[in-house]
Length: 270
Figure 1 (tube, rainbow, N blue to C red):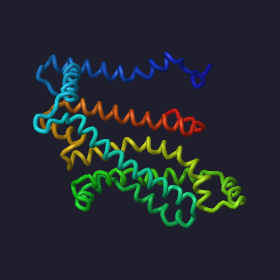
Figure 2 (tube, rainbow, N blue to C red):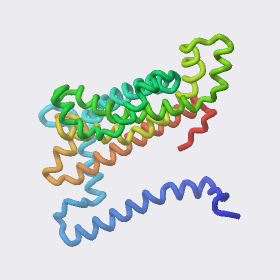
Figure 3 (tube, helix red, strand yellow):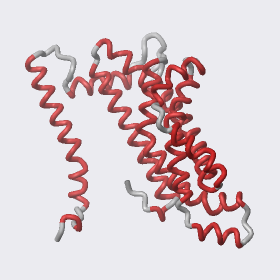
Figure 4 (cartoon, one colour):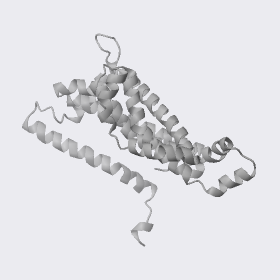
């Protein structure tokens, strides 16, 4: 039997899925042991036990000044910024994706513009955003919106264009208006793609959020990472990095479950 036709069982699938994580963990442990053996004061690769102790302290001990547990407060602030930014980008991407995909005049006007805008590095606009919108919450949310909206518009407009023309003609034959076609024919087919597009955009969205918080903020996960970097507190940095990765994974998993339950015919499995 060819390798392309072989399928691993459940146990083997679980083993193969865990294998890369185990190898990375082992490689880190070996590297940490080697560095600490040469220099017990080494801060670059703290021992896993030290990272665990730091994580326990960050998760449970309140700040002396504010009395709040900053780890959870930073998490709440960052997730709020991320949710608002991604939500606005998804709404804008859906609306303009449908308009560009369905209406030839809108497509002729905006498709080229969106294609050009999508090539602009969003981080290059960060100083402009701070000048225009200030250093508050708005500039951080706008960076996320600007960063991922063009991709969402292009992806969703392309999905709208892929809708078979026969479906639209049948709807027109039955007397459906343009709005009805968009609402009853295009929207149900574009929504599953929207969830998948948002999942693909989460990585860049986190990047823009962390960058904005690192440069101009006094709260948030990105701010905390860049605050402690001057002290080479790798145990704190790694704790936050692992937590951000876990948050991103949980959000992606939640969106995958939503896609499966809301649109089971799409077979979302990635």
